[in-house]
Image (tube, rainbow, N blue to C red; front, side, top):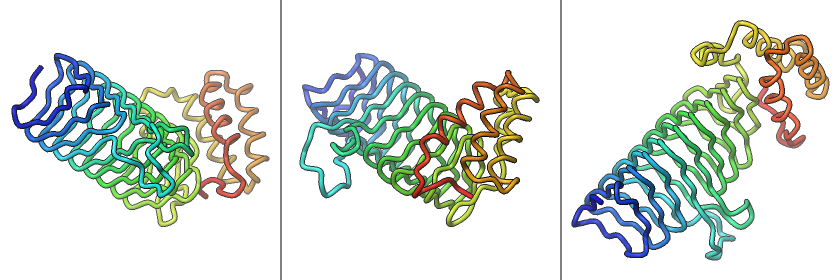
Length: 263
């Protein structure tokens, strides 16, 4: 185990023998760090924080701090981080809160740039990219393969669907469905993330189905209920896109009438 002599590591912390801890870092008693994970200098990892394997945690990161929630009274909440994530300088991830399930969760293979903030009870999927200064308020959900442009700000309880993308300085007050690209303050839907889908080897047929979903949601003047009916029918006419249609259906089924989707 490579622990720098200036690091302060509580003896109760569970650190894999192949992990490394950099100079002046502080590791709390309820922290678990998996194999081959590296922690840079001056990092603080506290609270009930579990970190998986092969993560790269850079200098001055703060993980597992108490939620910024006045109702929090010391309950045993957690931060859980998966495998192969890159977490860059000055990022801050808080533990969950009792009112939101108690767990802030980050999946696998995410690229989280400098100054990213994940508030309490956020759920981040796999293969996401958060550019510098992306900020999530509490209870936000971000799906797999989503990309957040620099300085993106997301209101509490908002969801960003899989394969979506936000432009720099976007502010989201409403849910962003899968595949959608948004931009603005407040954010508005601009297109679908077609180039991202091509890079992920989506076939022409699957991309055509995504275009049809975009048309139903944004081009034909339909209500959300009417758009959902049309989208559901795509599973019959385009069988290879059934999983993509189901992804959209599942997301839209959870949209709050008060919040709606980005328009």
